Length: 255
Image 1 (cartoon, rainbow, N blue to C red):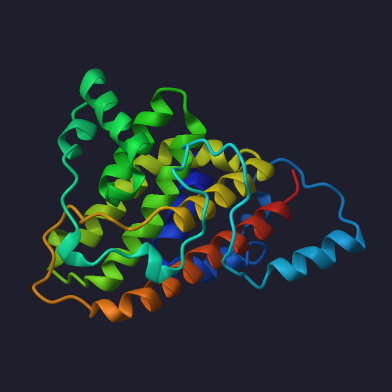
Image 2: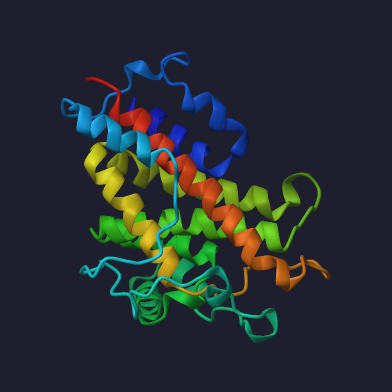
């Protein structure tokens, strides 16, 4: 059951086509999912949850001890967060984070802690796995879901079509599924933990610039850079609308 639930969460956040199936859990057979029982809801709590259905991207970030030690807690506007393509560079530690060598992986993790903004989604997925295997589960979960969101945006601003299994989107989805099998069961095992993790993902995304190049070959012509802020807003709205809907659905599930 835990494996099934984890896979469902990954697909829910990775593939827009599956959103409708998950947003109606009772009709789709998800009423038997096992998570910690939600607390009894007062009228005040119900009213507050109804307000949360209208997802609004945060404009400020709480002054908290963030697990990733963000360089700044300032919430950036899409325009502030986006770096012109001419100023972007490939992340030099991709081979290290993928190597499997403790020393080389740690070197890459140290670079991530130094400047998260320069790390592409592919590297974030591998970093999520590395953090998780080292017992830093909260960090692993944050960078895992951050990778999903940022990969979505990248395919909006640099549409890469390809053919069949050669499509970069397929590679990214496969990576997300594989690593998510380890991370999502832990995230989903507690509804409060799940909400906390997604809050941190949103805070992180708002504070960290998009200062990286994806690891796949970019098309000769992407979307005009003056459209990137709106594309980022769309990607964020879509992703966080889904996470809020997922929180609500799973919080309503009984033991």
